[in-house]
Length: 156
Image (cartoon, rainbow, N blue to C red):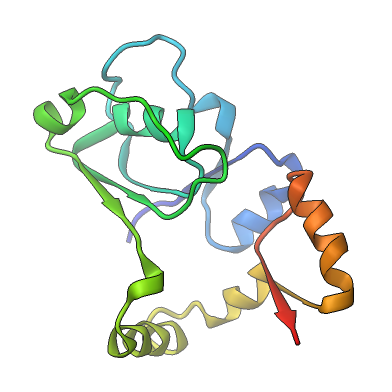
């Protein structure tokens, strides 16, 4: 029920992100706050962050009242800078997503929802690229150059 706005620095991924459901694509650099202020105008109801660093710091400052940032990665940095003000004055939450330690019954429930209720199974095929072990080195080079989109599934 929420409008999804995706951010990326990869200009060539706009069509891909729109196909996954984003209604708008913005440049990640436009999110980064340069003012140094502890809080910004509330812009986001929620943020899913897999980048960290300055983008996470700025997202925290830009959350609306009782907003939440869910962190599930740190591709840019494992650090962020913040004050307590967004947490105290807006009642925001910071939630870490730890998928690795989910109990099996929770995983089965999520996979069942993906397959049925959430109607996203077709979108998963857009984010997965399958490669064999011989192709993995080339894919790692793409990842290190910042060119990776989606996930790589290594078939062994």
